Every structure is written in structure tokens, then in C-alpha cells.
Length: 490
Image 1 (cartoon, rainbow, N blue to C red):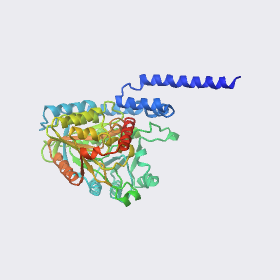
Image 2: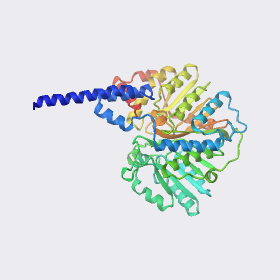
Image 3: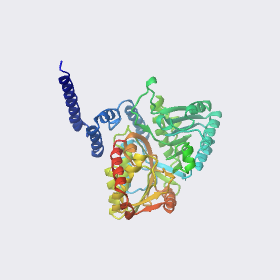
Image 4: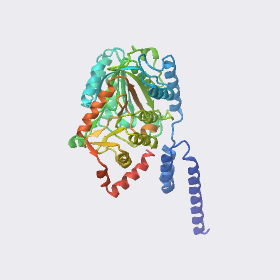
């Protein structure tokens, strides 16, 4: 046999197969996918097929299907059953027709009603937040439900874990969820499970990857939620992870790098909504459905005003193909008449969100964007910077919070009217690949509290100018734009 002929025939077969797959990809990858994401995947497949095809097979599907999707449908049905007797708005709430339309959309997409709730306090300082959680746990009588993306038992979080230990010792049920991939790289991870079990905490990993025990999922999916519920009466949520502000890194500590977050403590019916979120995730990991009568107690209604608000919890994630957090962000921005203030650590907006922000600026709304001067993630940091030119051109004021602090809060305010706070970043990952939870609030003083925090950010941040941005080198712009492409995949 002629070896040259054999080699040539093999190359022809491989080339034919490669181009056949590429042609198939052109007609299948864009289905149910944003043009930017489809273009990024197709570029990867066309130029580096040995990487592009396997990666697309592994993580390329735009939405989740299978067991977790089915579990989310069951959870949504239970939430709707709980909410079906509730009115569209809590007593005394007068949000206006435009905001009421947004609230209706949120309920249709997630099943979560708009209820009353009270803001007890916001926490921009981590030590204060952990102490407030510990104090609240010490008042628990029946149960404590804890859910965080990152969990570490360290010096900073020790007050929380010791409070959980005390609660369990006096007969309180203690349940804890932590993301498997999110928590695994931090100090103490190997002994964390044993320590929690010894303290009597019933804990489970969220989104676990353990093929030897039959637990497998797409490796790019995460549960990024951060919340805590005590007796169904007190709730905490926001951007804090349950770890020290330097994230267990001696290097971060030496250079002064710490994560700066904002979270909130709430009471009232909104805590029942948070209970539903925890119960959904507990069910997904344990197949145990928590009894509604026991774990979702009704709370008294409070007419909005002062610490009391109309509040609506908005969950999102791979089980929600309608991307309710992204839709809420876009529609909320359309309400603005005077000012918008956005704090986001990973700001990589899709086209709809970018248009909503720049359109607001073009119609005369003052738009302030608070982001970190330096990002802790290379790809996302450079992708974020690729949007600065368009934002500045539209008139958006970009405030760069000084390094080495990592600005990690996730919230925004609209006029003096609406506040939204929670765990979701403004990027593709938080819209489609990670489970998130946000809370919309109106009619009370949470907006003013967050605006006061913005005033602190504004005082210490550097205002980026158009002239300064124009001095950025071509090489930096090139890196920014390349990373922007990867953001549509990640």
C-alpha cells in the first residue's frame, strides 16, 4: 500500500469531517443564544477547533436541562401555590404604574410575589455583618438556614460558626449549603466538613462534582447565592461570602487587598421569600422538601415607609432560561428620571443592559458607575474595561474605587425610588450560568442608606475622564477587546 496515498486519504477525511462540523456549528450554535455569545463560540470553533469543539460540547449549551431544571419547575410551582392568594402588592404600597408593571414581570418569571419587609440595617463592613449574623443566630429558637457561595471557618467567621454551634446545642435545627467549586480552594477546606459536622451542622455541597459517587454536572455552573434565614423571621442577603475579607490569602493580607461588600438584614414577609430560595436549593441537593407550615411562617404586613418597604425577591440561574435578573436590571433602568447609581464588581453588560444604561445617560439621567480600579480576575477585569469608552461617550460617570481593595458590592438605586441588592453581577455568568438572588425594594429608606454608601465611594474613588481614557495604549485596548470576546463564553 502506498503510504503517501494513505496519509493523504486520512488528511482528506479529517479535513472533510472538520469542515462538516463547522458548517453544522454555523447553523446550530446561534439557536436560542445572543449574537455576541454565538459569534464568540463560532470564532473559537473556527480558529481553534481542537479546543472549540470539546469546550462547546462540555459547557456550550445556553440553558440547563435535566434534573436541576425539573427541580426548579417543582420549586417554582410550590412558590406559586404559596403566593397565589397574595395580592399583587402589599397593603399600603403605591409603586406607580410603571414600577408595578416591573413587579408583575418579576412575579411572572419567578413566581415570587411582592410583599412587605423591613430593612433593619445595611452592612458595608464585613466584621459588623458577621457579628450581626452571630447575634441573630443566638436568638434563634427553631431553625437556622445558611447558604453561601464561599464558606470558610476562619478567624473572621468564627463568631458565626460558634453561634451555630450554640444554636445546635440548645436544640435549634441548623442547615448549611456551600458551593462545591466556590469553596474548595480556600484554607481549611479539608477540615471544614469535619468541623461543621462536629458542631452539629447538617451541611451539603451545592452543585457538587464527584463522578465516583454519581454526582456530575457541567463544571462551569455555580450556586452564587448568599443568604441566611433564622426562624423564618430574620433574613440576611447581599454580596458577602462567609470568609474573611482577604479571602484566606496571606499575599492579599500583606498587600492590603480586601473584598468590600454590602449586605442587608431584613424582617417581615420578605423573609418567607428568602426561605423559599433556600428550600429550593436544599431540595436540589438533598431531595428533602422542607415543610411549608414549619419553615415558611407568615409575618405581619407593614405599609411601606421608613424601615418598611415593598420588597420582591428575584431568584435567577440556569433553571430560569428567561434570565429574570437581567430583565429586571434592564427594565429598572428604564424607570429612571433623574439618577442611577450602580455598584458592580464584574461589569460586563450584554447589549440590552449596555443600551439601557447609555440610553438613560443620553436622555439626561445622571448615571454613576462604581467599579474597582483593579479587578481580581484578569479576563473579566479587561473585558469590563472594554466598555469604558462607550460609557464615557454616553456621559456615564465611572468611579474607580482605589486598589488594592476589591469592590464587591452588587446593588443599584434608581432616583429616590427603587433599590436592588443581592448576589448578582452584571455579566453573562450571573445572567445565565450561576444561581443568584436579588431583592427589589421601594417605598422605604433602603434607597437612602445605599445612596449614603455611594457618597463614601464617591469621596474616595477616582473619576475616570474621557481624556484619561484616550491615553490608554493600543496594546491595552487590544487585550481588553480580546477578553471581551471571552466574556460571552464565560
